[in-house]
Image (cartoon, rainbow, N blue to C red):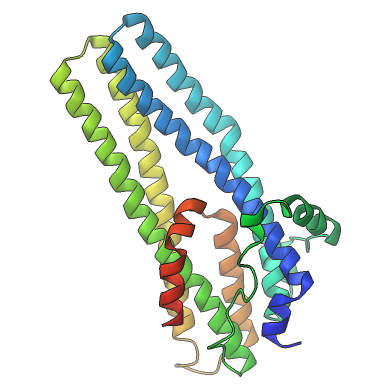
Length: 280
């Protein structure tokens, strides 16, 4: 089979369905982390309107419990889902691009039974199974096998870097504006000592999440940008070997298994614009 045929065969589509299902679950878990921040900010806004000392005490307790639940449960859960999804997507890439599995990483090839189990779970979710054919497109793939692999790897990096850049800017702007609005409201209405303590704690909680998310997204964006530059320059300083392709694939895998996700709603919002850029 050609590369175009391999990406659309049943084996490949099952792996795309499985990895997208797992990534969707990971995004839901990370969405819960973001929801805990939004709830904390909402509690602050509600407390400013109510102004009752007893409510402020309960609000402080809820904010602390939300943070504990996030660190103890959600972080590890999201990490496990992303690692399995990245392994399945690596299996897809190795088959479609005909790259040997990297046994030196000590990670086993996903079992066929597990792939089928996940794809069956996702079969009832239309949004998971749509748009999976022609994953790397049909036009523009070079005829040379090595250059075709480099082309597909570069496409992965371009898409990822653009999406993270846009998401980082959007979520930073939105959260900062929300915090500024609440602080302005607090200054206008006047707050008690308890309200001030709650305001500071929630603001620090939200800003901590923003700083961590911004740092992780920025680091992921820089990694893909460096890898994109490396792949774009491939062949200009000498012939590209399978060793170069394998090293680039290792970097892509490590990025997928460790990087923060971007919400599906934002991905779908920007998908059309990104596809237009790729076709251009």
